[in-house]
Amino acid sequence: MSLIYIDAFNGVSGDMLLGALLDAGLPEASLREVLARLPVEGYTLDVRREKRLGLMATRAEVTLTEAAHHHDQDHGHGHHHHEARGLSDIEKIIAGAVLPGRAAEWATAVFRRLAEAEAKVHGSTPEEVHFHEVGAVDAIVDIVGVCAGLALLGVDRLRSSGLPMGSGFVQSAHGRLPVPAPAVVELVRGVPTRDSEETGELTTPTGAAIVVTLAEGFGPVPPMVTHAVGYGAGSRQGRNTPNVLRVMLGRETSATPAAEADRVWILEVNLDDVTGETLGAATKALFAAGALDVWLTPVTMKKGRPGVVLGCLAEEAALAAIEEAVFRETTTFGLRRWRVERSKLDREHVEVATPLGTVRIKVGRRSGRIVTAMPEYDDCVRLAEARGVAFREVYDAARAAWAARQSGTGGA
Image (cartoon, rainbow, N blue to C red):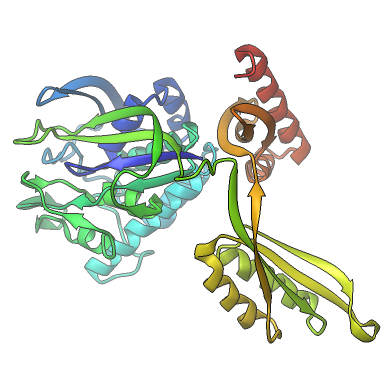
């Protein structure tokens, strides 16, 4: 699977993340094409290469074209006074653009997490929050840009280092606030943080919201094969450490050659006294508990009674949660489980552009050779609904785009 590691050794902000993705290979033209779909005006995005304490990085700077605005230069991130926007306004802006992959879902989740943090700090509700800092045009561009960039790069998973907090004070629409800003402290609850030699605002609310919403875990660099590295620059040089964010893009590896083989558990239970609705709820609960797959098989049980075998496939780490879900959601007094070896295709997602929009292709490889490639169902459904066309039109367009890409690249 495609993995990105966020190395926030000197903090994280939305613009630094965007710059790092561009530096790691996100095509600038593709990013601008996606951002142009947003019903947002009054800004320019300047992308340029700059050095920070001798380290070359990409700076992605959003500048407002309105005459009157306030810019806080503390960390290369704008805090602007505009027409206030609420969470519902921002959700409508995101929903109004056809974004690649899961970008709309991710961006909406990031803004909701941000609204919840701001509401907690200021004693209101997420729906009542007016985003003086984070709802400005630059934050919309940063957050949507980063989420779209991750989708365009085919990222499936995101992990991060601990987040340095910084020190001192920062000017905000609410006055002079301590660093880390109150919203940042709220966002990083339960997330590893660390000290830094640098002073000032290192991790901003926008940067923290993106990382804590999308990262599946925090810690050192995971086992991975790195294919690209990107550095995103903040506005300052940095006193002792370059004011940059590093991202590492690649594919995760395992202690075993487990990209194509692993060991998992099968769990099964016989049921002859449950309704179809109960089985549907149980299936949903098993997936929520971490099951890799769930299935229902009709069987004839003792005394000729019709019944169902509820089965699922699970990794070791999810066993306890899945067993708990089985006993909670069904009437069974026991279940069976056994360990099996599994052969599988090494898989990754690759974005293809179609006339109807961008679709992820799930690519399966064995010994490095492509064996199968299928358009992602969720992407095809989303685009079919957005464009008002049949599912099969999107599906066929994605298959054609993949075939054209393969013939153009010799099948690599």
